[in-house]
Length: 307
Image 1 (cartoon, rainbow, N blue to C red):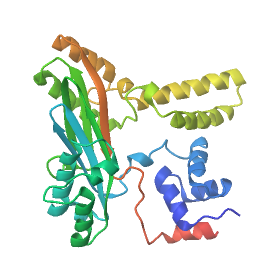
Image 2 (image 1 turned 90 degrees about the horizontal axis):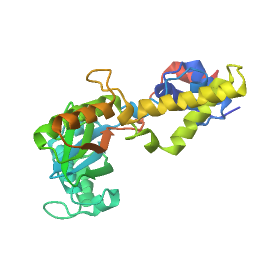
Image 3 (image 1 turned 90 degrees about the vertical axis):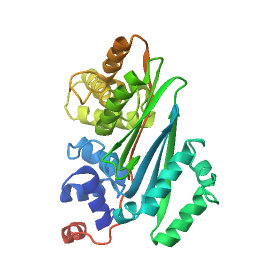
Image 4 (image 1 turned 120 degrees about the vertical axis):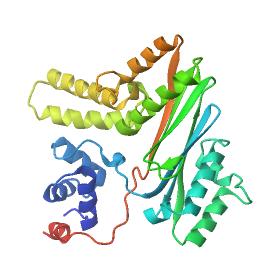
């Protein structure tokens, strides 16, 4: 019998939205392998597609900052939301985000950077852990820029200036003035916060992710009993839809629910009388891919595992 725990069943339920018994069966069928169980549930139509990354599963703050035509984003985690509201913690996040503007988008480089008042970023973080009395971590950093144009920041439901649970940066390369580019960048950033694109274009999507989606689509299509040539067309159709829905440029603009983002940018360029290129974006959502540690599990889950 496959070995897995009540915690595993609970995690699988939270990640997929599947029922308790379906989650247990998925783990049994896949030798306790969590990722394989997720895919198994999806092929059976028992789970929503890849929603784990959209869940906030850790506390802390995401910070964004812009200087000139460069923007930076960082994520700093804490154990509780109480600490995320702490002035000392927020001051650290703000300063580290500003520091990130001047270093490579590399976590080790950021940790080794000088911190205002002495020491390094990592040393200041260690000191904060000691004084606040709760574990904290500098999880990730990103930086984008343009040669000419703007980088527009946006924070959804800001907890303090420049920081919150979702932070977005949009880089627009153009000769157009800031009066044209800033409003466009703000609307695009709001769309990105809501729609959570995985890449700029379909071609930019992670190949491993595409292959995983292809395998799932193939298994689903094969269950239809249709001929191989029809199955292949079904698979390619599923992948094309996946690329369209998860690439920013082909997503439908949330502001009007009918226009592709690429057409929104093209119309803005026409209105401005000069080219506008949506060069890059960053979207950090607090806790993406992190599961909170929980000590108590529902008795029904424990019973399901022991059944």
